[in-house]
Length: 573
Image 1 (tube, one colour):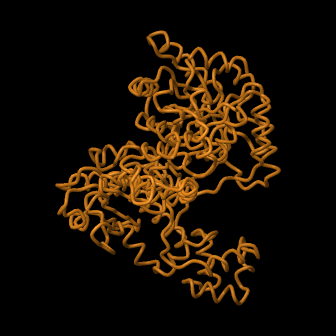
Image 2 (image 1 turned 90 degrees about the vertical axis):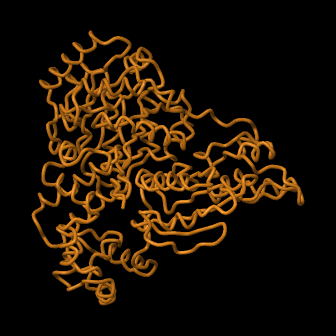
Image 3 (image 1 turned 90 degrees about the horizontal axis):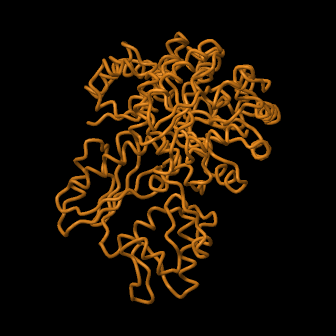
């Protein structure tokens, strides 16, 4: 049975939840939470690492948790988690799936109202007792009533794209290895690059008599094969992810790939376009009467309808069909367009690898420059750099730059935006840097007006280069904080700053809609890895995909420019 990084992260998160329900030591709970975040963001599969020694080197892991990772990967089970599950009833654990009910509130419901299940909660809500508890109130009470009315226990949640991809990729490889299978493609939300995924769609082309679904039933990650016919099978993976696999004839493969890639809205518009021309479009092809005009390839399908090929990332019915008809689709940014990365950390703050190691990794990624943007010293930032340590790091960067050929390192920092909009470092320090990345890392619950004011004040500072992960979201963990994006966009546009597209798998921040708005306003983007280790530089791939979903072209991205071009733009600011 394969254990994925997401399985380990989910196990650590669940342990943290169950410990919190039991009222355990907050430091122990935070250790599991931090470990889950580190594992979830790790681009390299844990199962491919050498064992506990390698695991212990991951930020936030250490010897004890490394042993637990090794236990889970070796056995498929974790005794600590199994014990906690025995202590906290399944009905109580189901409460955690309800919006607004974290483990602390679940514990309060248990202690104060003896609520241990959805049925208990429903009774308490009907009696009006929930709103009387501290940190609950009428608003949360109303949301819980609504959630209970429209949801059922065990409802499948949407997974972050990076997590779903951990399951989709191995499944595709497994199916492609079945004798007689000539082609397998991943469709659906994964292919479009959506930030969350509800289920997996895979298409296969195979010779007659191929036992594809029999092989699927033997897949080690499978929980059950829920349905199976001659051309379609439905299954559920161990983590609850729904999978649909379809066998498609070669002459219809392109049409089926288009149809099952979606989105639903894009497909509806395409069918209407075909109908307006007296044609019929389906997953089997494009037809005039009984005559097939196209279907073997997606390119042929679009061409037969008089359209340029529309990249999967754009298929959301946001004007892409009209643009394709006018030959006005943008030439989207590609990974090879990036010349540098302007958000990179080292072990001088909370990163894993040295400056030299990060440079070597960036060179291996065919980059010609990086900006080292270690965290500035601030409350809650471990090993953050103060003015003195920044000066020492700057000397090390200058010395290394003298030895490098064809590669440059920019001096930078990631500086906290304080609650009132001030920055964690003074201008006298920031003016010595090449790149100043600013970000919100606390006080996420401010009102929209206060959060907007906070951001605007920070953006007024003269040496600010880039607003990093601008919405503060963590996919599946934390909603974006409230702020007026239009006002922030105005401020960045007026002062010539830059908004980041952060490639950390749990962030993918900005979202695609905000990226498209920035592109339309002519605001430059920084497509960044936010790498905290050499392996995490591959986060640039996710950042590029996210930028593509927002219609970004190479010219819309700051770091498609040369080192000299970036320096010139930053100096002008």
